[in-house]
Length: 115
Image 1 (cartoon, helix red, strand yellow):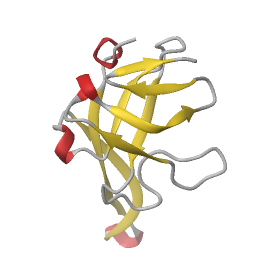
Image 2 (cartoon, helix red, strand yellow):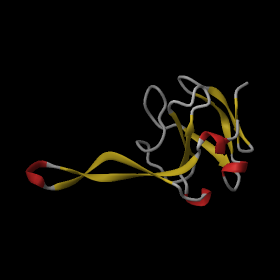
Image 3 (cartoon, helix red, strand yellow):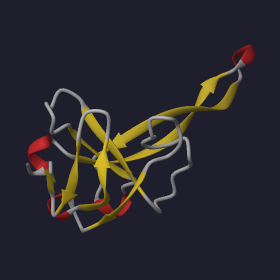
Image 4 (cartoon, helix red, strand yellow):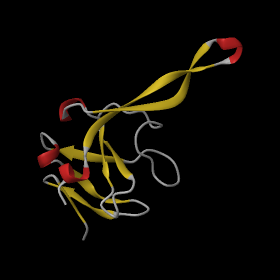
């Protein structure tokens, strides 16, 4: 299935200030995710899951400046990253393959496929 048919969007993560004691702002680990930027600025991608489309797959790109607590995480905690090649959603390829709790497959040439 084409990523564009799964409402794919490139995304970035950032930490935001959280309220601290006595109404002071302290830097916390609350994460925010922004979508809609071009591939060159993206740190990852999100798309509706090919298994049923009722939830999102969120995958982080390797080498894009993410801290370990930002972006996608493995089941036991810690970062999960994919090497992203291409120029846009239509030709995006991620390596290695993807294996999440509900979907295992590949993203190649803008397509999400299941073996």
